[in-house]
Amino acid sequence: MNISEIMNPEIEMISADTTLKEAAAKMERENIGFLVVGSEKELNGTLTDRDIVLRAVSKGKDMQTTTVGDILSKQVLCCENSQSVEEVARHMCDEQVRRMPVINSDKQLLGVVSIGDLAQHLKPELVGEVLKGVTEERHAA
Image 1 (spheres, rainbow, N blue to C red):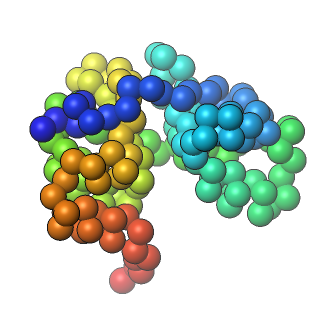
Image 2 (image 1 turned 45 degrees about the vertical axis):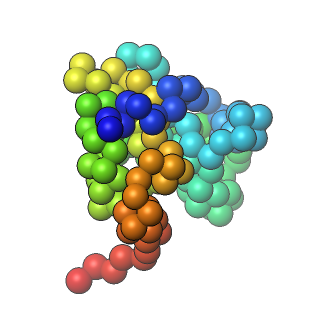
């Protein structure tokens, strides 16, 4: 089964110049914790509710003037829509990410896949392995 069969095609996107207050309000309104940052033509990064807390709130940044672009995660790990569910699950586990944008071979954004989406379509033993890999703390050697 390809990841395109289980991804969520509903993409919540914001621009990098959106304030953190506006981004947080959108997350609350949509009941989500992850936003893609960019435009239909360019993917600039991602923003999570955790990013807001750790990179802004904990540092006393002004939520009304600090922009998404000031704190977003610029390294975006994506998967291609032709990849298998198992391959993407292992990649998410290896990279310790809970959500991943799905693109096509032309780098066009098609949707987002989460570990919740994966959990519904993987064998139970692989679900446990992925959840453990994504959430375990890793130490540098």
